[in-house]
Image 1 (cartoon, helix red, strand yellow):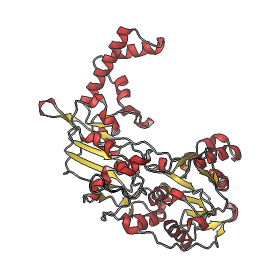
Image 2 (cartoon, helix red, strand yellow; image 1 turned 180 degrees about the vertical axis):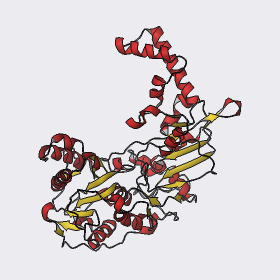
Image 3 (cartoon, one colour; image 1 turned 90 degrees about the horizontal axis):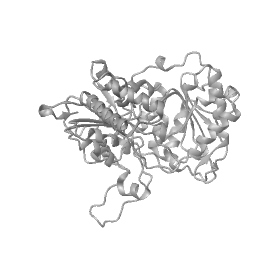
Image 4 (spheres, helix red, strand yellow; image 1 turned 90 degrees about the vertical axis):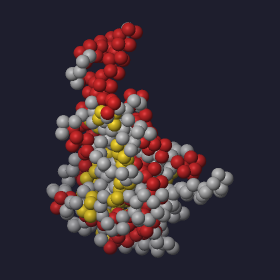
Length: 480
């Protein structure tokens, strides 16, 4: 989007196919068809008004309406320098006669390989893939398909074939203290902060951070998990109640509801938190309705000033399910701009190597706390020593090791193990790496991905967008 705005500011035309945020609506194809003054626009507007007034048109007028719309759409597309669409949207019949030589796929690690191939078969000669294999990858709802390799993105395949990605190392989202653990754990300590402490300090917000210089805390919760009403997910009533108390405290401190985000790995907990906010919140209900409560997967690529994470899992079996996925934890830890609050049970979580490392980090920083919000105290809970330690090297950008699917050497060979984990990246995320499988050149087009992720059955993923640009080539062909 940043690239598109630069091009638009330079007098170029950018056209987007599909739904867009409100502030980008003027760039969409349907909006420009309705508002640009082109030959035939007056008749199209009259027919559109007549259709709205009467609820329909005669067969002859309907045909004329569709012909005019198609002609106006093609007129706009032919003069566009950049066309934005999803990977699947690149197969739209309106683009079938266009040839895009330059293609940029954003969120490339969230697109399954067949999706990524759709914009590439339109004449691509230069391709830029932007993504992060250290975060969540495609969502594949069909388990056999995921186990057969559909959960691997084109970005990751190229990486395994030896195409070394280029990492963008400066992050501009998070408070420096929030960068430290993800950087050291997932990115070999290479991330640099483009923002200082002063840029990421909330003025006038009197929240009881355990360490005033570090707006982060792990809030110990020992309440047991429950199976949700759907019987396919989990919820934790204790954590949900304390999420409401934290949100109420933040709102009383003067924060706007739009600045606060709640994330959880489980759909059952997401729905329960929404219910608790409505039933137990002591402030106006409209304030709680504006709080965004989402799954971790759906929040990839998103950000909020304050992120509250509910871990949910707390059981005698010490099981944490897909909460153990390092990519999911990486996404969760990198959504907050000014502060991060995690609620969970350290006794259960500390048995897993990665979570043990995170809890130890919070404890060293004086941010592992318990008690009521009005009187938080350092937690004296003993963390377990896991039998194994988290292998940070497996996330190295220069290493070709992966725990994702590897195809058999030949047909008939036994399939690899079924534990295929997911990888990916956040849209418009400062923690991203770009794989450049083709020679570079002037960037003239962009495409972005809409993906499915191999993950829990109760998780929700956000759809993503794509962009591409066009200009006339010799002989009338279009390149983008």
